[in-house]
Image 1 (cartoon, rainbow, N blue to C red):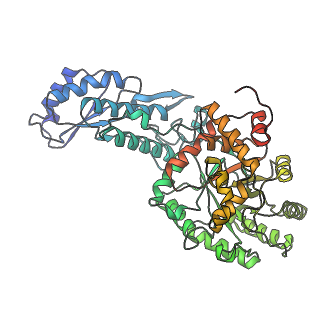
Image 2 (image 1 turned 90 degrees about the vertical axis):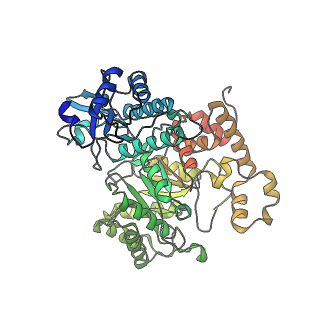
Image 3 (image 1 turned 30 degrees about the vertical axis):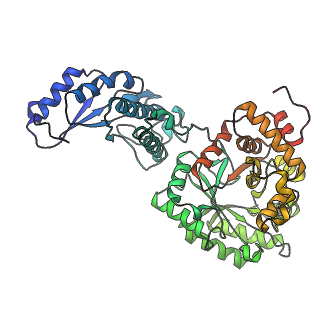
Length: 515
């Protein structure tokens, strides 16, 4: 202590459960007799279970003594334990110690000034928990540290957001409890797409409105940190067209996103709204669209490439040959279609398998608890009984990526029967949506969803999304929003469990158990 007292440098002091108030005050006075601000950094490391009880007396003692110190929190070392021969930390406990430490400082009228973390941008599996829900069984998969276990990228992002929420709320006039600011923990579920070789989150973020977001990187950061790893975009998305791909690509590059974890889905073969989304499905046009997407996204390979429209005048043989060739070239991992008739899709699969070529493994179609009266937009398809039965029977080979899953807001309460009466007075886009979704059957479905949501204590839209996730086919649900609060609310669908009888009742009505 005497030696360090003579150093000009700032001094870091580790403070743990064995530290007493008297000893800490004496130590700080000895190390910094002139009470120089910034000279002494107190690094607290108690563990999540002890910090709320053991830290307050120390903070109060230092505060009351008028000592000018920098308080930092080390939430790693106090939460270390051994499992399967590995030293590890629990993400949830790391976050809890940070939030409890923030609360202690708020209650004491002091400030937490910093964090001490071990972390890496690599895809390691050294700490359990976090957005990927790593378990102790995952530790041997990629444990490369020679000493202390580190948070991986997603875990580190989760810690950063949790800390940011806590500080923002706890240091404003409301003095909220920091623990209430942590986003609701969700259990993101993952599925498989045939031939892809990596998990795909069942909730997929659609980037249709990404170009309208003021801070798109912040929104994408939160989505990635939540555990959602699949992003859907298209050549024609944005203004100008392709802008959404550009934004997504810039985010991937700036955040150095691990492409082995990320699932990029994009679409081509379709003109823009000015041409009423007419197909552009020649081999040259498809290749041109794909190359443009790769450039804008800044990647060499798209995980899932979907043909956004179909041109029935082009034989499926020509289309399958083109797409299979792109798979072989390594430009796409797998491919699928969007807005194709079921008959054409079956023909493509049959020809590909008979020829030993890469078959389409995905279909992106409109699907919702609210069934449209017909195709919502020119050249689009929607989930009907035959399509659902086929995909349920072939779920190991074909995945469904559902769009307009909330029926453009109908399943959140948008539009009433009065809007139906005045539909012809609305602009084209809204008039089209009202006529597609505002049917008597859908109003009844929405009423049933509201009743079930009330019974389960959740919102109607989470029931609607959960309904889709629990269909028998390999279903992935697209949600496109420009607001973080809406996306966070959609994550609640993973926490809603619906029985088969409840799903049937939501869809068809009839009898249901007493609610």
